[in-house]
Length: 141
Image (cartoon, rainbow, N blue to C red; front, side, top):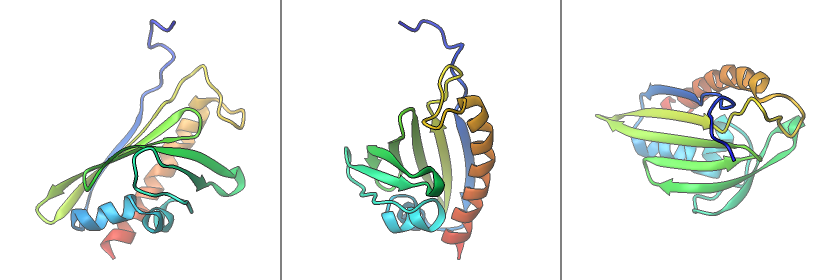
């Protein structure tokens, strides 16, 4: 039984304002085609409980499962064995505030590839900054 949070590493949480209407951003983060355009190839469907895969190239196909689908404001899914991703969208007068949360980090755990969560989190934190730039370019085009 766990009774302390000492092993928990804080979520990766990033927020940006996209110069695009909320429905356009939703389509970019909650459709298979949209996710593929800025993140990874996938067979996602926006249905609660739907199991899909993200194709992480050399890392293979990561199993995922949709846990929350609330158009056009919130999508959450489990990613791999430990993580979850949440996309939160808020309409801002024709623009969209997009908050991205990558949670499930734990100092005591290794990824499927045998690396520590701490090590991977640093890499992913930087990676998400780049991915959000790709998302912005995609929806603002």
